[in-house]
Structure formats: C-alpha cells, structure tokens
Length: 225
Image 1 (cartoon, rainbow, N blue to C red):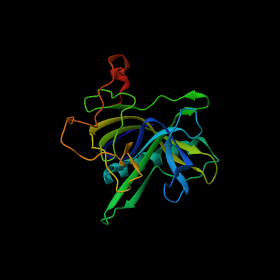
Image 2 (image 1 turned 90 degrees about the horizontal axis):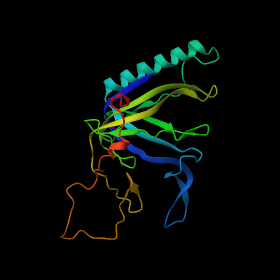
Image 3 (image 1 turned 135 degrees about the vertical axis):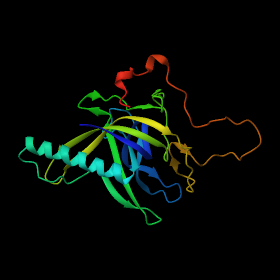
Image 4 (image 1 turned 180 degrees about the horizontal axis):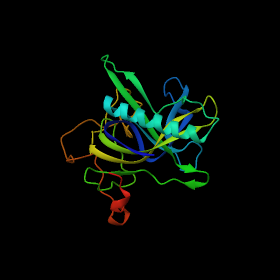
C-alpha cells in the first residue's frame, strides 16, 4: 500500500548513502569509552539502510494510523497465525520540551534484500527536479515523503507495520544545525572546525547541492509527487 506523508518536519535524515548502527561506533575522546552510533557504510553490510525520522501534525498522524491499521487487518485476513493487533507501529506520541504533544514517525528501507541492492530513495525539490544521490537533507526541513506501508511478522513479539521510504520531495530546506557538543556530527557537518570566522569570501548558499545531471533524472511517471 502506497502513501504520501504531507508537509512533515524531517529529523535525522540518512539518505545520501547507506548507514548502519554500530554498537561500538563512537569512542569518547576524553574517557575512551565506546558507545553505539549510526555510521556510514557500504550497501552490502549487515544492517545497512536508508532512513529518516519525521514529525507530522495530528491530522496526518490520524490518517497514517488508520492506513496502518487497515494494512494490518488485510494482512491478518491472509495469515491466520498473525495476532489481531500489531506489536509495533511506525509512529508514536512524544512530549516536547515545552510540554506540547508531537507525533513522531520513522521510515526506512534496507540497502539490500537478499543479495540484491536496493535503489536509493530519490530526493526531489518542490518542482520535482531530482537532487544528486549524495545530496544531504537536513533536520528541520519540510518535505513530503512517499512510503510503502508494509505489515510484517517475525514472531509473536516482533511484528507490526513499517514504512519503507520510496522518495522525498523537499519543500523547505533548513540550514545545517550546529551542536553544543564539540565532538558531535549533526546532519553530516562537523562542528569542531579549526578555523575562526574572518572577513573574506562566502558563498550565497552553502548547503544546497546542485541538481543531478540530465541523464540521471527520473522519468516523470516514476516520481510519486
């Protein structure tokens, strides 16, 4: 079942290349302690995939919930051993720092299924002009997300509905966010630059990548927006 999430706020996008979670991917430069983090990887590595989190408004969350329940109900009708209610859903309610209610979701697609490489999710602008494959979407950007709603059943404890990302239409591109942590990486940009701000040359736009070459563009009927 195909669905488009409209005008959502992007969180932690990892779409410019495959990523995976490494349980010992980060070493604290002060304590030397290892901890887990998501790291870039090759498409054929275990756990590799493309993903992004997002924040949607209440109406969009209600619509998504209804569609996911419908997809699960249809799957149960074809699989007698599946439970009536799924254990996991692709969205949840979160309390923001100011006490307000937010509706968070996540969509992902594996970089490979079996031995076959998955096509990287396409990213296009508001006029459907594709960005290059290494384009880095940023947290805080506004976008439409095309997904496939997929019910799954691994066990009685591990089942539910997931969203496989197909493509993203960028409506408003946010500048890269900086972090107060000097060792962190936010949206692919490091914050521990060795340079101070000085007078000199600057670019008009430092975070928008150029459009893809003509030969790499999608056909119009392949773009879901």
